[in-house]
Length: 184
Image 1 (tube, rainbow, N blue to C red):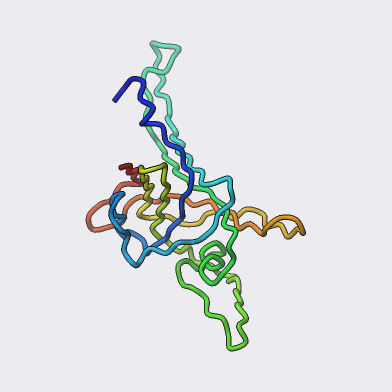
Image 2 (cartoon, rainbow, N blue to C red):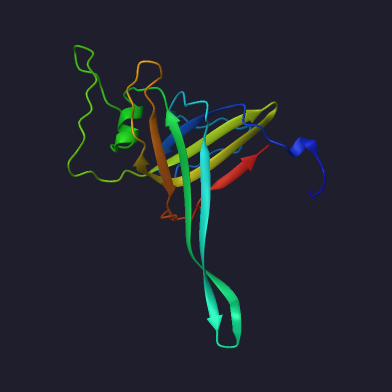
């Protein structure tokens, strides 16, 4: 409701990043998530950032020097974060093999080979954070990793796997939203 209400202020104190097969439903806050949701582990203290950019094209007319209308021509929804756990789940997710985990060999060596002919892997993305008793979930039914940050190996900082994920329009038999924000 409009007006001053301090209980409507949200602080994302702690949270987690989850993935599941594309179009997997995400339960409402207060309901347990299904076993298909996989927690990607620790992220940097920067947390999660998401951006919505709309492109509006002006409709000009002979009768006015200002636009008389705007037509929406594009919507770009991105989510960015940096993982600091490197394992059999996070490497294929960030590098481009999707949600198929790697298996260490008999010597315990985990090897990830980057393909010269990658295929984008789609997944559902879930972000969840708690603020006291309030649980918030942000859900993208269909997303794909579109960018990876520069990875730095340095002696005083953890290796960070930074990714950008773009939301994709629904392809489900029952259409789903581009994204959902749920708070309880």
